[in-house]
Image 1: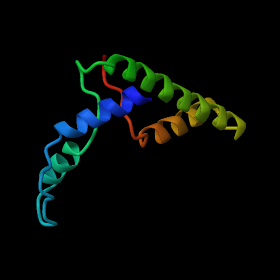
Image 2: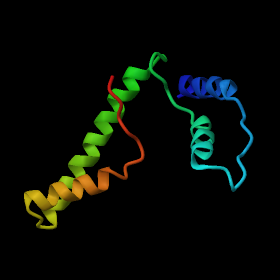
Image 3: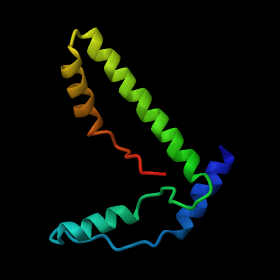
Length: 98
């Protein structure tokens, strides 16, 4: 955990503080601002591949849990898959190709 905290602190120091766009700025300006505030591993960073593997395993476990829940609710296979797809499209972390 200490290694992770050190890594995050180093990443924070690299962030450039952008001015907050005013309420009338266009969507691209806000997207750029929000994206610049994220702390995330990037391809080529130490631990990136491990993080993506862990993220995929976590997402898989979430999908499995939703599938089990759908079965317990008595949904057929098609309705269960629709439930999984509907929930996972709102999942906050997307897996990129490694």
